[in-house]
Image: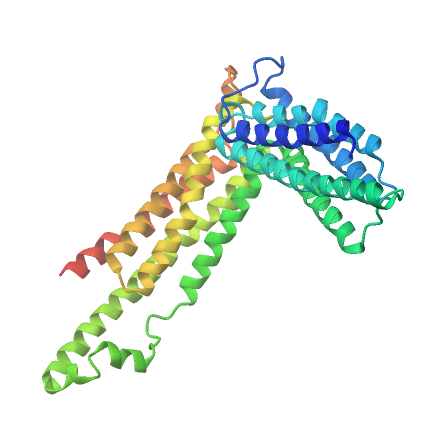
Length: 378
């Protein structure tokens, strides 16, 4: 391997490592670039496209015989000099203030993945260069002929870099609101699936009798109770089952309207959002936080129901309701552009009227929760 190529390869790997550390603790917009948050997404798309192009060239040069050090070095120099700095700068320009925390986290994660995969590819190229030098030095040949397996290692590594680049290009293309819509759709599906499972669940389904016997001291626990003890136990079980059935019914009545807010907010608010601006970031952060918590809380509701833990189930149902109500209230009015004082901007629309009805329904369907809790305590 020529000294120049060795230095260039080492520089690339060192840069990748340093950039990865920088992305792990971003301090804000790069001060020396003269760029702002508005430039972040176009630069992210352009630099990801450039990186994809350069690694394509690099991989083809690496697996094509004869191995040409000067050509490989030229591609790596382009990476080191402009492509990688632009790639990382774009990620650093994405901030919570301008793009939301979730969007920043996604961009940073994908960028670091791209750097990791690039490092793997460059190391494969480095191994090929070293082996090529050994062959030339000891066997006086033009260079090595790679096996199909060796070529596949380079191709797979290249494909992984492509994957990260494509994901970043897609992220930049959809923008912040498009990213949020995707996340909200994912949470909608999780909530809908969980509610369907609760709806299909039958509290009367018997468990495994074998394990029931084991858990009752080999069945000896019931000996000596007599018919009177069994009757009291059956009566208690019947009351518990009745409460469980009632709580399941209340849960479904409360959770079905919760599922409805996801498509309603997507269609009437997110898809109608104005061009993203920092003034929307705070509102969208709060909206995402509440919509994200709901699937986790519904899972807790389901788990508590299956365990016949009525108190815990009621507690998480109330938390679910609180998050859903907060999410709806955040977007009850149409989006308002910052510094726009037009009174028509605050005019109620179809979603506003729907929200009022929805809030009344939620108040009504959640009333039985307190009754169920009181009945359980009696």
